Length: 407
Ligand code: CTP
Image (cartoon, rainbow, N blue to C red):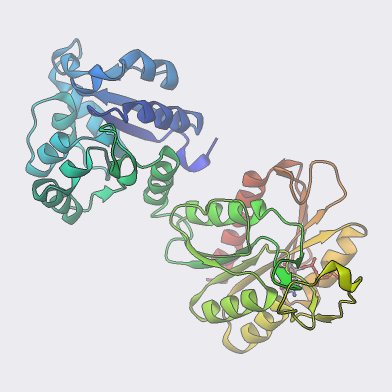
């Protein structure tokens, strides 16, 4: 379930392309997220996929051209169009793109498209030659100038057997784009949120490093939650195995020093910093230029402290009042509240998100987390065990409330 998508009317147009099978996945993911997905198939789409596929996935009727004149009469297209929060055409063939560009309305989908006032998202899918044809390029430009969001196509294997540009964008990327559009007027619109995530890596030699055990999941979920509230998001990330949410400005770093540099250069133009990263507290004093060889015996690695990024940020905030809200995390193995309260004060935070990393299903690699929120007024909110996405939403809702109080 994705609250932003819950009960939103998404009209999904499916046209004639082998990528129609991916539209089924898109419809399924949207329905699972809680959206009300109405599907309109063109005649050519029916060559590739059946309305029943979509009906089974969405639990709602899927429409085709004969429904334009069906039992609900000519108002069908108006009805579908009027209630849509967004019209997504995926896959969009060159033919349908041309019709949309010129307002040609000769089937249920294109008639409906003319009746829709909601934002239009188009995911083209076609042969590379067709995509690169000046006619298609021109038609896409017309639609872009009309503020349609064009996503993809991407490179890969095409139905022709060739490898090239023309594949439909992945459903998760299309959903990311839909989320950005639906979040546009959210409570954090116009605000710039910086999120740090992952565990920094402090190199010992060219192949080894001291790492913090962090998957980055909680930080990435916070970045997505901030996007869902309409914020502009910069995600400063240590190495992770995760894909960044669609729409973030991603800055990849390795070390605590690089993270600090990225944070300090980004905060002057930010409103909030959410420091979810596990930053190394120590790093090797010297970096061996060559791989340390085993036959030389066990090396002695001397460590030095890294700078505390949050302390630096608070110092800056005291002078410039920027960023207005600073949130830290505290991953503790004992005395959770005591340590978290101390960090909240010593690091000058507005809010701290504390978790007991020894609790079952909580902490580093887990998909769930159980956290306590403590604000600068010492208000303590204990949240139950929930998914990291839900924790992220709770944290960002709280941050959003704090931000509203500041205004
Ligand atoms: N943090 C930071 N800079 C560092 C280390 C940590 O900004 N060099 C931030 C983390 O991103 C987190 C918060 O400080 O938001 C608390 O991190 P944590 O590791 O729990 O606290 P430490 O101050 O490092 O204390 P300790 O490791 O002793 O618990």
